[in-house]
Length: 302
Image 1 (spheres, helix red, strand yellow):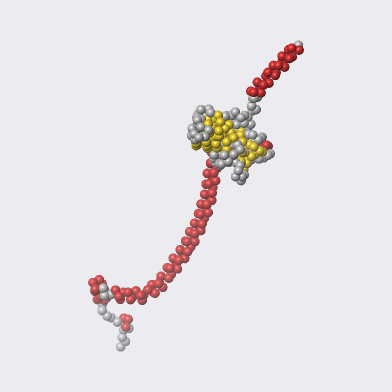
Image 2 (image 1 turned 45 degrees about the vertical axis):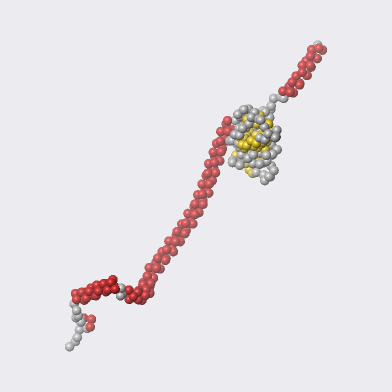
């Protein structure tokens, strides 16, 4: 008689098996919760199955590593592109800001040229000579543009200097801060006339030979007086910034700050030369008696 295979042999029923294992699970859970008997066994099992867990996670780890590599490479390329775009946009923004500042300064120069009665030629500063003892700049306009030595150079704020030398395409401007340059000025507040001279230092002028008791105050505006026949009258030159009065000296030390400055702008205005000044009144008075004497001699001859 054939016997049924071991696999098909009948045993406890499925319900009995389920009940047994449920009861066993509850007992193990209760024992583990109350008496902590199974923690060491659980740790031993975790050590045994850890290599199997790592081996099972190998495909997921490879997938994550590959994905992270491609994502990080994409992010790196995108970051590099964004950096390049940032630098390019930053440069364009700086150029735009420079153009806006230049445009504003050109508008101010245009308004200044319209306010002035004399004609003006706009010029641009090419470079500043590296001479520590002279304050000069080179402009891109020369005799071909009608520029001649002696013409006054201004910006939108006031007098910058005077043309002292030129060539067909270039002109040299001596700034009012040059130690050998002087400008006849007048105090706006009281009309007092004087001469402001350069000190050879940027941003510093000096009123020399001013008596200690002269009516001059800090903050007084100095403008060109026009009595020299070179500088048109009324152009801002400087502001009195410091006055030192010492009773033991005859003259006060008056320091001024230029109203204009080539360090702030690249464009300047070259004013047309002033009309020749009238004859010196002294010469007129000296020649008038001579002319009258000649007339008398002619009348006597007749």
